[in-house]
Image 1 (cartoon, helix red, strand yellow):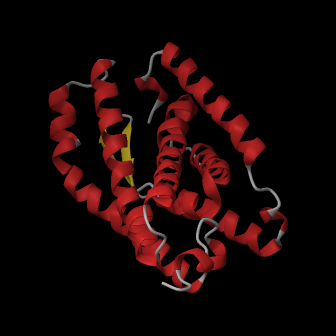
Image 2 (spheres, one colour):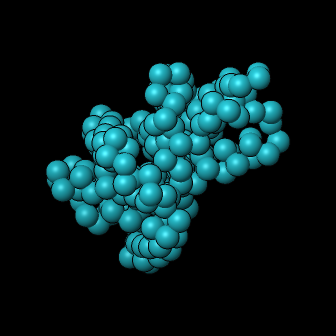
Length: 219
């Protein structure tokens, strides 16, 4: 999102949220994993994946872009902390490429990186505690359904926020965004679900939150 949409007060609030989350992300991140050269390649490959995915976007309203997220995939692969780092690096690449103004950094990183990664991590934690560990549960709930939930929550937050801040009218958002959300919802679910299904099937060592012992053996 463009920084021109937000009052300086909200820019400061977004900045505070981002730096607070980043401090914990850097502190809790599994840096040991990235000491392995193969895992470094996977991590930076995920950053490049997000960069190109977020380039495939459409401007719904001036300064308001929509694109597939993919943060569910990266969070399941690396956990919340490293997903925060990966998403921030990908967004920095978007800014450096001149595809968004630097004033939109803090709103965009909070809404496109922090919130989706946090929602995915919460869903993963709840499912681990209350739902039997099974391959299909992992893929369907943590990937497919989590991708849809992330989209619904973020669409609701962004729409209500833009209306309350009087950036766009309810009619503008309904006509240009909410009316096409069904076409956005299913691709988000399918993208996250199918990629995670393929990764746990062929490259389970790339998915840090998945374990053969927990989800496959004896099932």
